[in-house]
Image 1 (cartoon, one colour):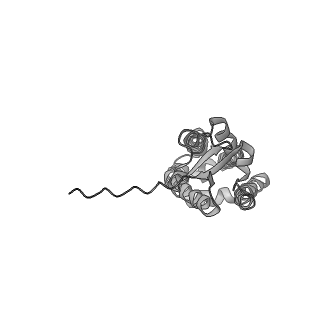
Image 2: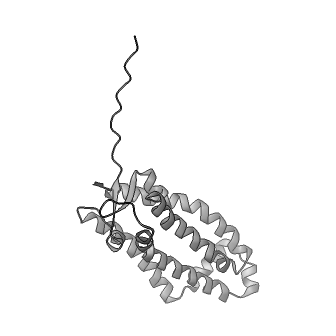
Image 3: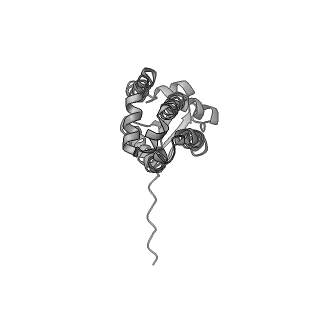
Length: 189
């Protein structure tokens, strides 16, 4: 097995971000001004989308779309396909952090005066949410960033290029082998 390298994994991360942002941002952009309870309504669908993208796709196809496009696959340490339990465990820290961040957003938006909220634009609501963040939510944001950075730092310093999530779940990310060169068809005479 050839292990997925740093730059390939970073590329997969950015591809996944580029795929998810256009899916989620328009929903949030339209929904947040639409209803003060939008983040509450979006909580379960957003959670389901995250689980589908980061657990189901990994366990079903061996990676997220970004990983698949970068010719990477998540495998168990013995090379077997990743299990659903391992895929969930790999994503568990990020899932916990993003779920807590979503709960913080719900609490903040529901505390805004209803009349004031109705008069705000998306940008004003976003700025208001940022101003009202409780200390634990700011700490949560910091922990999320530290987790993401530590994932990449850890994979730089081990031979199998495993990130923290790989150590937790007993997985490794491997590069797909290059296809053997196909012989050219012989000319027919």
